[in-house]
Every structure is written in C-alpha cells, then in structure tokens.
Amino acid sequence: MSNLDNLKQEFNKNLSQISNSEQLTALHIKYLGRNGLINDLLKKIKEIPNEEKKQYGTQVNLLKKEIEEKINAKTKELSSKKSDKFFDKTMPGKQYPKGSSHIISYAIEEITKIFEKISFIRVSYPEVDWEYSAFESLNMPKGHPARDDFETSYIDTPPHPKFGKMVLTPHTSNGQNREMRRVKNPPIRMINISKCYRPNWDATHTPMFYQFEGLCVDKDINITNLKGTLDYFAEKYFGRGTKTRLRPHHFQFTEPSFEVDVTCTVCKGSAKVNGKKCKVCKSGWLELGGTGMVHPNVLKEGGINPNEFTGWAFGFGIERVIMMKYGLDDIRNYYGGDIRFLEQF
Ligand code: DAH
Image (tube, helix red, strand yellow):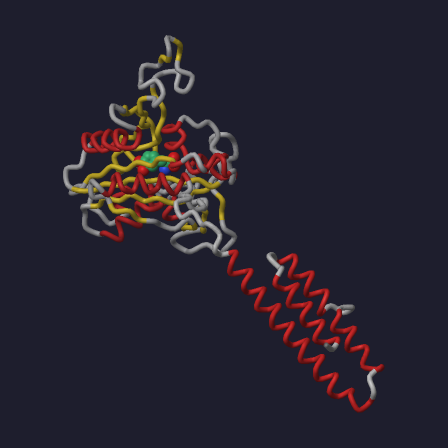
C-alpha cells in the first residue's frame, strides 16, 4: 500500500472517532495545517523521480481535496447536532425595557382630556410672541408696573409698529386675544397649553415651565360657571372630594380677580395629619393659580362686545399641579433627566 493510501486510511479512522468541534479543529490542523501531513507530502515532491512527479502531485492534491470535503461535511454535521439540543418553549421571553411618557406630557394629556369632556378645545399659541399678545391686549399697556411681575425675556429683533417687541411669552394668557380673534363669534371654550419663560430658578421655579389657560366667553357667563368648572377640574384631576375656594386678588386682565386654592391632597383640607399640623399646606389649602372674569377691555381688544358677552379665564402652572397631586417638593427633578425619578409616573 502506498504512503498516500496509508494516510487516507488513517484519516478516515481518525475522522470516525471525532465527536466535537474541538477534536475536529485538531484534526484539521493535523492534516491541513501549515506543518500538517498533506504539506509534508507536498514537500516530499523533491524526492520523487521526475517522470512520477506529475502523477504524485495530482494524487496528493486529490487526497487534500477529499480530506477538506470530509472535514467540511463533519463540521456541518456537528453544528446541526447542536440545534437538536433541548429547547424549552415554555421559558418566558426576554423582557425589553419599555419607554413611557414624560411626567409633563402625561399631565398635559390628562388635563386636555378633562377639559375636552366639557367641550373645551385644546389650542397651542406661540411661545415666542409679540408684546401685544402677551401684554397690551391684556390691558397691560407699555410701562405698566404689573409687567415687571413677569420679568420677561425679550428677543433682539426690530419691534413691530403695532405689536411691539418679540418676547418669550411669560404666560399662556397671550392666547386669549389670539383665540378671540380666531373664533370671532362666541361661544369660546379654550384650553391653551404651552411653554412659558421667566428668569427664575429654585425648588419651585424653572426658567422654562408650562401653563394651561382656560377661557370661556358666551352670553350670561358668570362666576358661578367659573366656580363650577374649577370644582369639576379639581375633582377630576386631584381626586373626589377636592374642593376649591376663591380669594380676592388683582390681575390687569380680569375684574373681579381671584386666586384659587384647592383642599390639600395630603390632609384633605383638615390641616391636620395624625393630630399634628399638616406640613405640606399648614392651613388645609394649596394655591392653584389666578383666575377672574375677563376685563371688558380685553374682550373689546379681542373684537368682542362686552355689553353682549361676558367670560372668565384662569391660568395655572402644570408643574405646580403635578407637585400638588403627588406631594413633590422639587420641580427641578422634572427636567433633571434622572430616569429613576421619571420612571415612577
Ligand atoms: N397669567 C397669570 C400668571 O401667569 C395667571 C392668570 C391669572 C391667568 C388670572 C388668567 C387669569 O387667565 O384670569 O400669573
């Protein structure tokens, strides 16, 4: 038997004993590696008499090819065995983490739905607006000290002859005049939700924040309607049994004007928790924001006859109502991006 036949027999025997991929790799190296047995045979070609060289070379190459094919076949056989391994179909699948709405987006959605149920229309007016929409149209002429309360940021562009400079709107009341002019003929039932800007930064203020503004204009609208709507909102948003109260106040754009309080979500208005003074409210009440009957000048400026129509308006902070609802004490968490805080809602 020739050398080649011996090698072939030897290989077939080795191959028949292979049962895993490590062994197969070793076999591959032994026969086909750089210093493997096939290369040894090829190197020996020098010693072969010239007239036999060609035949010898062909035979070695044929044997090499045969070994390669058999090793490839064995590789396939071993890998297909792997997939025969027991697969438990009843094992629970991998859970991928799910995203969720940001706490602010969630509150905006909730508030919108509450007002849509009583036929208010959600609108969104510019965050970068004219002084006219933010002030003049709201009975706050140029130089009026009440404008200072808002500490407004101005945009560095040439002023408009009628509308004045551009501002980052300091409140959503800028939507009142725009909505009156859009609708033209009352009834108006608006809920305007938007970002607002004032240069404050502490535990209860961020320079960018959200407000929601209600505006209702129609024939015979009065404070009873306002109080009823506020009670409805407070019950729906903060929970059953929440009450509201109005305290006299002053705003340029409403007359009379009020501040609205709601019963504290922690002590439910009793001012006491386990016999001690409630730490959250101290009085049983928490301040929600400003409201009042729309000033006749504001109606006139919006193209509405104040002798025919009356209305009320309110403006509340979204971050504030969330803090009241969940008893949170630092508004900066909303925008800090700490996922552990945000995941809780
Ligand atoms: N714009 C006021 C503010 O940001 C809130 C406000 C008060 C809005 C009374 C109103 C209102 O519509 O009637 O402080």
